[in-house]
Length: 290
Image: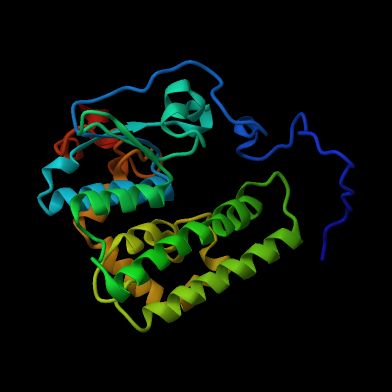
């Protein structure tokens, strides 16, 4: 241990006036909107409000995979929500997701709009709506649901735990970094052992379980998350790497990873997606020379 101070919790906690860290300006202890702002609505049946973080990528990959299968009802508008600027606290977004987290989906294909929030719930909703990437029953369906929910329960240890203390906290502290690095490596070992047995998490077929896990753990083992690849020695997870690279070759996965992305190479950024042709005409590199 190398922490030099000891924190004594007060009898009654109150939020600090400033606690530093990358997300300090949007953290608060209450829910609800901070300002009035309606969400835009495009022309497609599905309206997605998101950002190209791992949780956002899950849904855009799923939508692009559905379109690649020929499900025209999966056409969507992807609107950018800049979470660092607090856009998730606008009244329209809070109405779509009272938890004020991206992504949020509004299905306007029926007489009454249907809101769906939480990325795992969106994946399952779309899979059931279109009858795709979700086993119909038996052990494969149980495996798919189990790994989907494994991801939803495990990723907070990777993102809010390890990622926060390793990459975003205002100061480095050994105890939380050790604690969460230990858990993340255990999770990678869980995945690696499973993927030594089967090509995909639910078995022989690519499913929403893979779409949920890949943006988080695939990015991690490729050194694309928190710049922590060397620190965690991710190269030892050979089966996770094999699976990651296979999914990365899928054209729909590559497209989905670009949507609502606002960082990285300009050619990889499609801030908003309103038509399939946007991939050819509206990435940031193309807009820069238009």
